[in-house]
Every structure is written in C-alpha cells, then in structure tokens.
Length: 271
Image 1 (cartoon, rainbow, N blue to C red):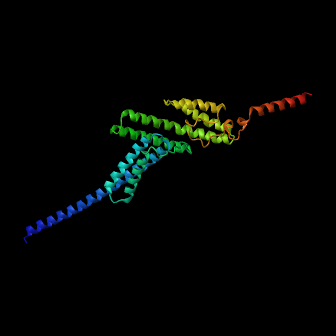
Image 2 (image 1 turned 60 degrees about the vertical axis):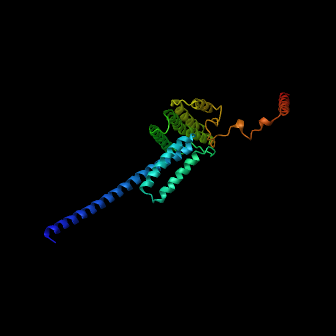
Image 3 (image 1 turned 180 degrees about the vertical axis):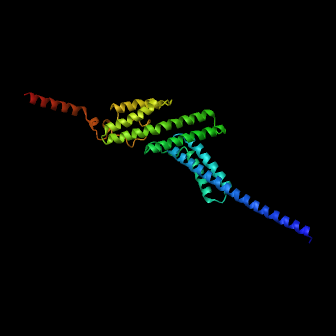
C-alpha cells in the first residue's frame, strides 16, 4: 500500500471516529433533552392533577373539571411517546381516563366541600381556580368550545373563588358560636359578609347570602339555607327546629290547662 493510500485510510478512519463520537454526543444530548422534557411534563401533570382534585371538591360543573383533566390525558400521551416503556406513565394515563369517565357519568355522586382548613388552603384553592380559568381560555382559543361557554365556565370559577372564602369564614363563625364565643362568631360572619358586599359577581345567590348573613348577625336565624351553603356540618342547632323542642307537640287543651293553672296561682298570690 502506498503512502498516499495509507494517508487516505488514516483520514477515513479519523473521520469515521469523529462521526461515531459526534453521533454518540448527539444521542447523549437527545437523551438529556428527552429526560428534561419528561421532567417538565411530569411537573405539569402533577400541577394539573392537583387542580383537578381541588375542582372535584369545589366545582358543581363537572364539564370544567373534565376539560382540565383532558390536558392531563394529553400530557401523559406525550410522555408515553417519549418513554413508551415506562409503566408508571401508562398507569397514570389509565387513571386519568378512568377519572374522565367518572366525571362524565351523571349518576356518579359528587361530594362538594368548600370549607378550607386555613387561610393558606384558601389561597392555594384560589390560585388553582385562577390557573383553571387560564387553561380554559387557552383551550377555547384552540377551538375546544365557544366563547360563550368559556365565559360561563370562568364566571362559575369566579363564584367558587368567592365562595371558598365566604363559606370557610361562615363555618368558622358557626364553630365559634357553638363554643359560646358570640363576638368571635360575629367577626367571622362580618368578614364573610364584607367579601360578598365587595364582590361584583352577578350571581343572584350573592344578595341572598348577604341578607341571610345579616339575619344571622341580628339573631333572626342560626345559619344559611342549605341551597346556599350545603356544608352544614358546623351549623349551630336552631332552638326553633330542635328535635328536643316538644312545644310544637303540645295540644290546645294542654295549653288551656296551663293557663288555668297560672290563673289559680295568681289568685292564690292575690288572696
């Protein structure tokens, strides 16, 4: 083999080695990007699943929760394309599909709970509701539903944004009243009422809640109507509706007997 041929062979080998190294570096970089994308998608899914769980507890309109859950399903499908052999992705995708079927099942009972345990939980819930509204706006721009529908959805989310604060403070007021701390109870009731008054939400229930809270503050009632606040586990016992109150069962004859006895006592005292 001539010196020139040997030189060409060495150049070819060096070029081939450089190609192998470059391809190896390319594969490493692609794998790094895929892992980074998987991490980002996983973080998005975890955030979205948190939003879905909160909406399941707060939102009467299941369609809103279903549309947010659709994003979870799509992100799982994108992750499965990047890493088809990861079993946890298929399990997560299956769970999201099952959740969607449950949300679309009108016969499935929905357990709403708008009472929060702390101000931090209220702030967290409100942040998730705001994110849900942004997701719905983006989905509407993608043509998933009409502008009229998205306005209805966002108005409902705005109502929930108001309600988790109001309902939580009313519940805290009920707890304080049950502990015979009337001043603290009224402070919570006024806090809830002020939030309702300052809100410009068009829902007719807002005015009803303001009026009924005024009745609570003036002692005309113990709690709000159930259709306004279904969360009644902390409602104080209303003496007028208490099962222990048997005055409604007293007959007219018994009342007359009591009145006669009272007259006799008065006559004896006067004599």
